[in-house]
Length: 357
Image (cartoon, rainbow, N blue to C red; front, side, top):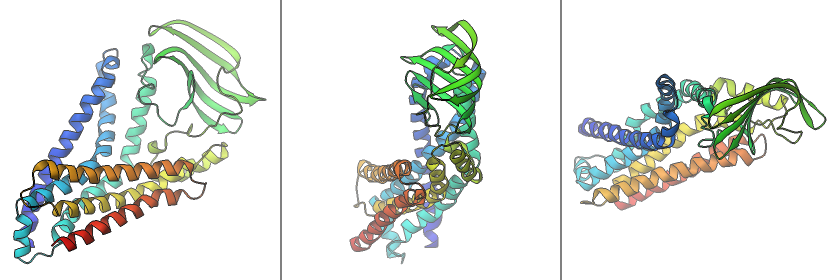
C-alpha cells in the first residue's frame, strides 16, 4: 500500500491540474465571447478589476467538476494499464486505490468548502457590484446575459433596492431595457408604499440613446415600477454574496422586510452539505474508474468520469431548485437530500466494485 501512495498522488495531481486548466480555459473562451463586445467599451482597468474577482469565483465553481473528473480519470487509466491488478497482487485491498484517491483529494475538498464560506462570497459580491455599477456606464448592459437572482425582473424593468421594512425601501435603482440596451435609468434614495404605489420624494430619470446619456430629469412622485404585489425577495443581496456566519441574520432581516428567506436559509444549510456531497461523488467516480476493463481507451474512461460529474451537477441542481419551493423551515431537507442520493450512488459503486473482482 505504501508503494502505491506516491505514484498515485503524482498522477492524480497532474490529472487534476490539467483538467482544471482545460475547464478554466474553456470557460474563459465562452465568457470572452459573451463579454467581448462589452469589454471594448470600458477601460482596461475596469475589465481587469472585474476578472480579478470573477476568475476565483468561477474557479471555485469549476473545482468540484475537476476533482470528480480527476478521480475517475486517474483510476480509470490505472485500471486500463493493469496497475490496479499489480497493486492487488502485492496485497492491496480491492477498494484501497479508490479510498486512497478520495483521501488524497479530501484536503482540496475541505479547502474548497472553507473558501466557499468566507472569501468566495466577498469576491462574488464585489464581482456583482462591478457588473451592476460599471457595466451600465454608457448604456453597457450585462444583466441580459447573466441576470442575478437577487434582482427583481419586472419587464421591461430590472430593479434593485434595499428593504428597510414591508413599506419602506432605499437605494432604489431601476433600468428600462429593450433588446439588451438601456433606455432609462431611474434612481431614488428612498421610497415608501402608499396604497398600491411606491412614492419617492426624489427621483432621478436618466434617458439613453445608443449608450449615450441624452437627458436627465429630477422629479418626485410614483416610481414607474413596483406595486403592492411586488416581492422584495433577495433584494437584500444574493445568498452567495454573504459569508456563512451572516446568512441566518440576513434571513431574519428578510423576514422583517416581508420577504421570502428560504434562499438564505437554504444556502446556510447547503454549504456544509456540499462538502460531503463532493466527497461522496469523488468516491463514486473513483470506484467506477477502478472498474474500467484492461486496455480500455481514453474515451471510455472519460465518458464514465463525465457521467459522475454530470450526476453531481444534476443532483446539486435538484437540491437548489427544491430549496426554492420547499415549505419554510425545511430548507435543511433540500440541502441534505442530494447528499443522501449520492450516498446511495456511492454505496452502489462500492458494492459493484467488490463483485467485479
